[in-house]
Image (cartoon, rainbow, N blue to C red; front, side, top):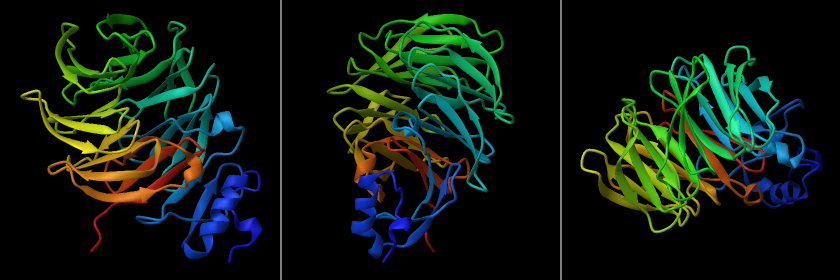
Length: 345
């Protein structure tokens, strides 16, 4: 049986209770605790035991709202609280922290060449920073709104941001100037992504629609429907399929050539975390249920489920490593969990 010292956090009664109830029956995995010596944590109910990166500090600083790997897979960036943190994937250690955001960081993106990072959040400026050093390179003033999503274009020259003002705003990365504002959504826009070829933008909104936009003209080219709020979108790496996640837990897969729905997956409530595997075959989902699930894109059948402790409340973000071997999940309670998702032999 574990000693009291071995439980996850002496400052978190729910964590102590959870580990005490479950720890004796679980395998031990190491936790990389930022600024503190690592100690064992007693793992999950389903799936392989993860590597855990645990973020200490005030509760408002611990939530991991965004995660993204650099294109070479060597660095993992997380956003939460008012800070962006950069981790060395090989050592699992934090190598830099980018502070200074005025409010909660909701979204982090890495340029396709892996050199520039971008982050944005509540009532805040758009920040560009150097991935290698963690130093802020430029600040772009944005309107005092809640910006919840951003993405680089495939050529790295354009950033798009979205938020509570219902618009998609395009920014020139070199100059930091806004170049266009795409209007059409009736309510807050939760998520935006570029297609792999850079010609199309997809946006998800509280108005119950996914909208596709022609980047060259700024015009809406298609409108795809959900029953309720749409909170996430993701393009498959081959550009053939779009996934969209709804407040009600419905995840829809769309054929981008025909704009027709391929299938529907009953995933988690508030399915705001979506990611395709690099080989296009698997979709990872997360939401307001304490489990990350993997789905077969061709059939919509569940492939695997990785449970996280109930006291972490929400899986806010998921990401595959570029080689497809690792799945990362960011949790509102202050952890990043990394699973080896390679097929077992």
